Amino acid sequence: MITVISGTNRKESECLKFASLYFEMLQESTQEEVKLLALEQIPHDWFHSDMYTRQSESLKRLQDEYILPASKFVFVIPEYNGGFPGAVKLFIDACTVRKYSANFKGKKAALVGIATGRAGNLRGMEHLTGVLNYLGTVVMPDKLPISRISDLKNGEGEVIHEETLKVMRAHALEFLEF
Image (cartoon, rainbow, N blue to C red; front, top):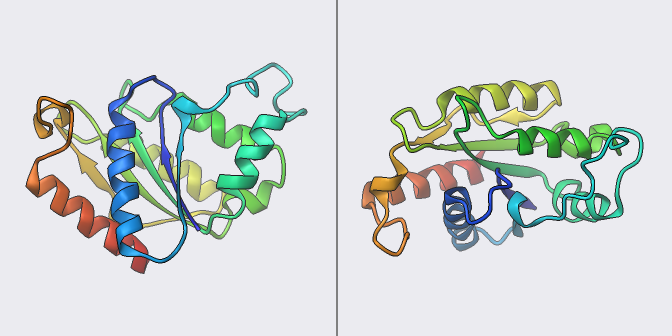
């Protein structure tokens, strides 16, 4: 199973648009089960002072459905203050409270960075690579930075930039072979 993670808890995010698009591209290209986990749509009752000793039931359900059975992950992460969103790190930390090694160790990941600026969240992807490598996840070397995302969409907010769509498809296919 492949889990695509939209890496922000910001409501109505641009990140979810790109994660959903990547998710659809994977679904069209494989028979393997693909799931989309949007951090903006999950309950946040697991963020409390005892989160490292007592895991909430809602987080256990998310972990059992999206994290533990996955063999691969795609993290779509927006640039926040020169890095990746704290919500992603917090979610990873919260998952590792239970079944530490089974969550990410020995699994594979692809990273897609999005930004309104021109670097496509390169720094954030490198930082997340370090975190995932520490947990034993093998990160695909070909990371996908997507820059100036505001220029890639039409008036309805749909990604229509053909070159970006082409590169995303190629990246998704490469990840399936990874």
